[in-house]
Image (cartoon, rainbow, N blue to C red; front, side, top):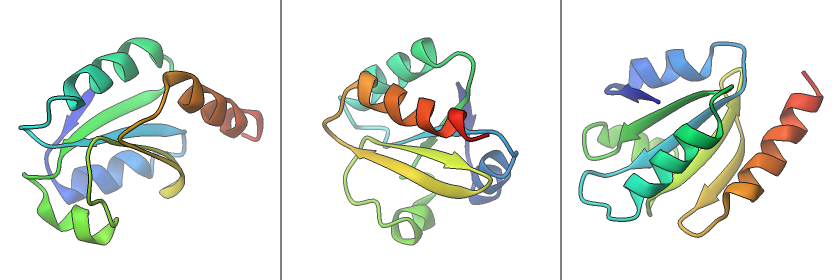
Length: 103
């Protein structure tokens, strides 16, 4: 899982033309680390990244993220799916498979 540290890195990462999964977290979030670890181990064939919102504060407002962890699936810079706080890896996999069917 790639660590993103700026808005520019985030925008470049989601614009790469392939489906991407981004975990939005904070440094003090106790549930974020297990989510990041599960995403990294389960979705090895997809580009995955984490971005700490306390380091890149402007993304919180721009993306309307008020709670963490948030996991989003992007394709060509567009957010397709968002999972907030309580979700299963199966839900993410189901939505990702939908995206992969159409590319």
